[in-house]
Amino acid sequence: MKALSMKHLRYFEALALHRHFGRAAEACAISQPALSIQMKELEDILGAPLIERGARQISLTPLGTDFALRVRGILQAVEELGDLARASFGPLTGRLRIGVIPTVAPYLLPRIMKDLSAQFPDLDLRPREAITQRLVEDLIEGRLDAALVALPVSEPSLTEYPLFDEEFILVRPEWDANKPVPNPETLREMRLLLLEEGHCFREQAISFCKLGSALPRDLMEGSSLTTLVQMVGAGIGVTLIPQMAVAVETRSAAVAVARLPAPRPSRTIGLVWRKTNPLASQLAQMADLIRTSGTATD
Image (cartoon, rainbow, N blue to C red; front, side, top):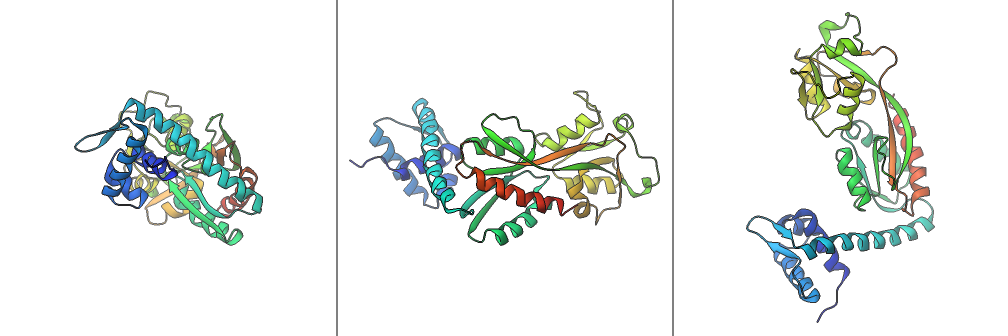
């Protein structure tokens, strides 16, 4: 009988994550029949079923659920052994999986990748864009090495490294350019366009406008800052966007921008990583370089 291998564990983790043989096989770069054979072999080794196979997707048995938690811990420990060796080399090298929130990625990520490639030529940067909650989950579970997010994330197992602050900018139709800039109380009476639920920037805008849980009935939502700004250009309402997004998002829209009255709303962008990550000192160096990239966009 074959022994349990790292290959078995990696394939099972992919299946536990995707809950679908086809998507898991694609993620593992193998054929679906090959993945099925490997999973059957794993169950034979353990002598118990891990997977309940349905017509459209799979689910985990109670044993499979517990097994998945142990597998993630094992794989994360193995990855950290590799990171420990990389840390002894000095500068960052090899694969680095970094997450970026959607209200940062389009505006800062291209510059970051260019600057990091110049500073660390042997670094294989693997960016992933997702909302904060997903990035934090992936960090904790070892699927990411670091993430660029708005602070704080308030997760005890993560190190938070502040990089820079940026203001929120008011975007309104261009024919409103000469009108007084509204204060938070006035904004509450206007048709405010916000990102859909799940985006931390949405919650920050709601907090500034002091909307609480009583959101206006005519509140409109969009899936991206681009959508919001274009809606403003069409005269549908007003919105707030981070300063780094202004140059990109307003260049093709009939809008006017204005700084809000003091105290102006802002956010802190930072890099976060697991406290147990052996690459902590290298990630701090990388964070300093990202700080320079971020402030250069102002």
